[in-house]
Length: 264
Image 1 (cartoon, rainbow, N blue to C red):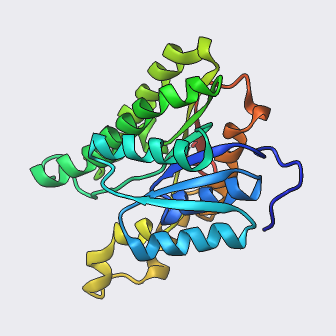
Image 2: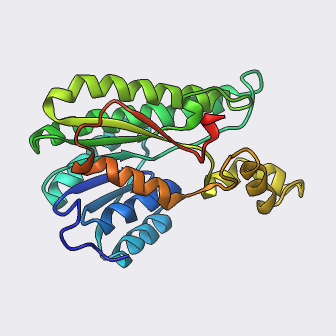
């Protein structure tokens, strides 16, 4: 993918947390393909280098800022880095996320706190830190990666559902708080997506020889009316639309992208 001349996001600067893998990395590439310069957040140096290379191969420019999204100081560092490196911030994508697959009764304290810290605290800290920078540019767009199970419950995903439901309501609250400043806040709610995290959900079963990666995909596909899981770049394309002026009158929404799962 090459940068589109006169692309929707020419001259824009995007910050993508969790940009080193899965939906975050695919989103960084999509935004770069439309002309944005990208600051990629993550924790792993090797994965960050690969993500920066992927953006460059799309014809774009990216830098990585490594740290812990659950630390509020890191969010300030990421935003400050975008301003110093590229002159400002126009787009923020909260794609950092984690999951634990267990009932409420079986979820450990540590697992619960980890899921909430990454999915909720991280989204809150980065969004909060970004507001002054977005205001300084005359507005912008925050896109939170929530989940279709943040809109409806799902057995065996208690902590994850709680975290993504919180992201949906944070999205609505911040959209109302900043609508008059032309800062739009929306959430994208994927269903099953073919990413490393989909496999990590069943890592123990794979290690025990109880499931293969093909089994995992088949189990998810069986639940989706379209009969397939999404590709991460499909999520990135929706994020790119919400980041662009084509969606200028859309704020406070949570959009499912799940092959019809929620329509059942």
